[in-house]
Image 1 (cartoon, helix red, strand yellow):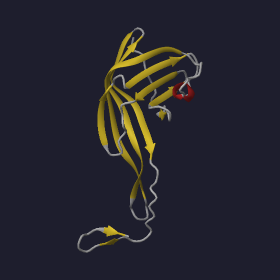
Image 2 (tube, one colour):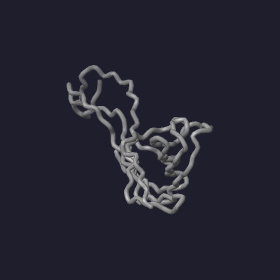
Image 3 (cartoon, one colour):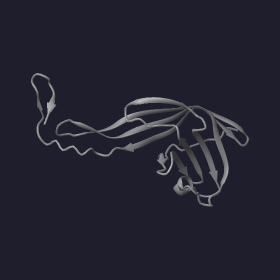
Image 4 (cartoon, one colour):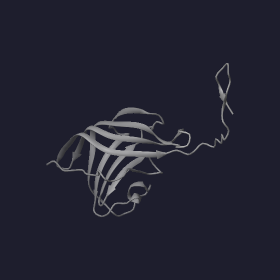
Length: 168
């Protein structure tokens, strides 16, 4: 039986205590354990295998699931997992792009963060009553904001006529 996993309107969240990215909806959780992944700070695409270190799990709970249920090192006693689908194969495709903000006054731009778009390709979930395969399953956008650098150039920059180096 083909069952629908639908987290389209749910934002990707992350735990600060471990390398979990997740989406929560009522009594369901879609979890991506990104143990073997370093999210780049450059425009790129990386493809990884779903494996023991890069796990994808879809869980059902007997009550509303919260951040504490997913992220705490000792999870709360309730809600309880009632069913779990574990991805046994497929690829994780992460496309990273810089998020830029343009200054209208001087047309300069600065990077304010990075968007990591995560898609699963040919993901196979082992269910209680069989398997379920998705050719393409969009996990979503994991956005990481950057901290501004403490530069304070307030003067017009100058350029060396011979070497063409720019300085303040």
